[in-house]
Image 1: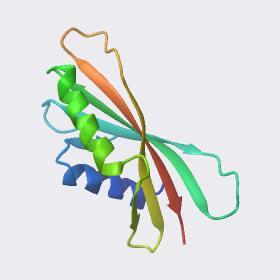
Image 2: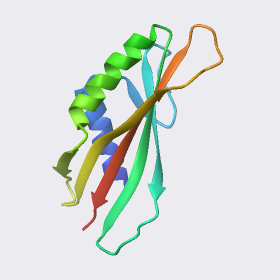
Image 3: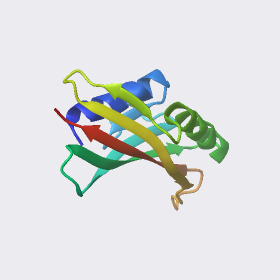
Length: 124
């Protein structure tokens, strides 16, 4: 995943007004907040396409419904068919909603959800 794609995801989270940071939350603690990370998928072809799974993990001290509401926003924004863009470099990106699931925290009063997005990039 390119840094340009990471910036695109960050811009999308800002547009959705979702409190988000990449890899770690560094701002003052407030709920809910979301942390993003990714896994690159080994390319199986030579067409210049790179694929990644982007994991967006949300945490709150409110109800699970708070996280489910944000998940629905993300799902509606990226859809199953994907949101596409041409990035500043001229590369293309497609981001689509994949899956989500609640994640146990083991801490009383904290709730968590993981939202997975499929990322496809075509680099110039």
